[in-house]
Length: 402
Image (cartoon, helix red, strand yellow):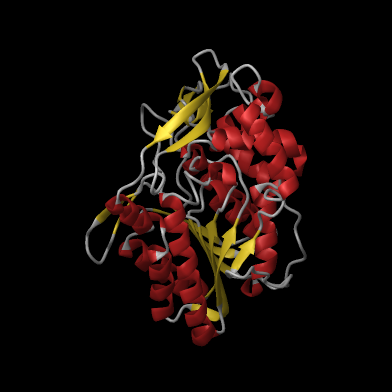
């Protein structure tokens, strides 16, 4: 037993420990927020899905929405750290344990593997599990955010960077001082070099997604009508210099080109489809690393309130389209657009005005700082309603077993 009271300790938006009970409650609340739809008569009729990046952010939303709404069974892949004597496990470890428990209680066969999704070894492990346990794969959701990737073919290690392309970027950022007071600061980021662009595309572009689909197709595991979606983001013009027009944007452009290539191949191979799903802004562990996103999401929440569409609601819509409940709707670039609620001119014009007007003295009136703080803390299981943080909790929770 490793019970202790866990006190939130953080460096900026990163927390040193995670709270198991809080993380579990977050997952339970996500599940409860999903509107289920009628299920088939037997488990053999349930769609088989693979979610790569299943423990956090939109990948977690895809997993929970897939289970609670679409009734999927299958495999989730994540890369999380186990608890130690000095530290809790990562938040994704506890979220995965909670997701597995909910799936088990619902009678759904969902297995979770912990390891490097970029490696060929993980692809083989997943392929074996699908072949032996499920026999086919109907859907693949790709949602991986990582700082580096080792190319299995060349052994080259690629390192991603968040930088603009072509010119120095200056963007407004939201930060909090030691007393928790919000401050508006300016972040200055120098442009990326050519090698940094190549490296970022090597990590966050479509190369690994394509390797997954090619590998599973080579093992004849793709069902007729197989569909796959890689999760993406376009974002506001306010953060374009650091995102869509920067190194990450180059990677997303590569991801979208990969979708078009895979779509043509899958149509011929199994009557399948490949798309990117462009999702809306959200507070996630990966998005908080992007300068300007913290301020932007706080402003967005103040403008829209509950009109912000949650990741789990967006992914419920995606599952409806992938499973044929609704037609698969794409834009001219072959992308499913789940971000239209965010990018209307009416919304963006108001946010742009607030962005320009925000100062350290006024930001608390223009942005929803309480919601933002709670959302960041909830990524690690803190500030979750209904959890008593004065009580010691067990931190040594095992990874879900087969």
